[in-house]
Every structure is written in C-alpha cells, then in structure tokens.
Image (cartoon, rainbow, N blue to C red; front, side):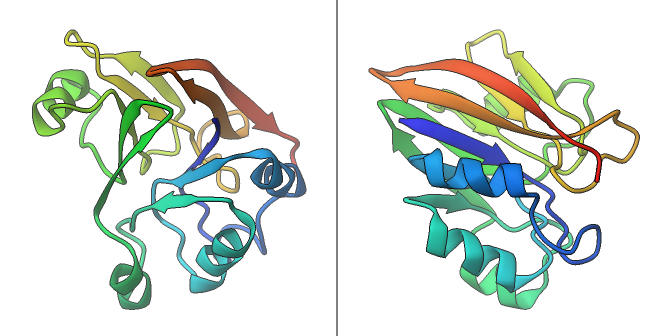
Length: 166
C-alpha cells in the first residue's frame, strides 16, 4: 500500500491551494494521511474526492466545521501496520517516550503542528513521522510531504519530498 503523508496545509491562509506535485501524489497513493491544520473544508472535500482512502484529524487551527467531521486522533491498520494520526505531540524533548506511552499498540504515529519534518523511533519501536508542511515552510528550507509503503506488517520506503518554491 502506497501512503502519502501530509500536514499543516493551511489553505487558503498560507497558499491558495495544494501544490500540483502533491496533488499528483494523491492520485498515486492508496491511502492519504493528513495530520491536521487544514483550515478550510474545501481542502478536506478535495482530498475526500481524490484519495482512495483518507485518514485525517483536525488541528489547532481548524474550526468547528472541520472538528465536526474529523477526530482528534485517528487510527487505522494499513498493510498490517498499525497507525495513529494526531496533530500535536508537544515539545520535541521527550517526544518519543511521551508518544510511546500515549499510543500503546501503535507501530507508526503520524503527526504535524511544528511544520518541521521528523523521523525517529522510540525505544519500544514506535516510529514517529512528521511530513512537515507542503504550503508553509516556516523556518525550514523547503515545503515538504512524505511517502511510504506499508505491507506485510512493515513500513518501508519512507521518503521526505521537497516541493519547488512557488
């Protein structure tokens, strides 16, 4: 199963829409995961219409309309891999241990909020992935998203993609 991971799209506050290369990946992915801060319902509806399967959560910048349609935490088993998706995980210091305690029985946690790409593994084996933001790089050199493969209970091919500067 081909996965597309994104977060913090902030449309239309940070961009008019999702970047073309990211939208092209939506069509190639079996599952799209969005870790919150959509900002507008139109982006949710766009991905619902294009993604084979969408797993998403709301973020701190998402209003009542998005919160009515999305959970704070989503869980899904894909290709035998147990995923959780959440927007915020708190400070970077102690993140792995804190998330391992909060998400027992999960293999991979996808999160956002910081706009900073992150790929680490907690001592107990929980993989933590933050795809950054495809529209608001903040202090990062590039806007980003991630792709990965999930099959036979294993996550593989995790790749951070840089988007061209608009």
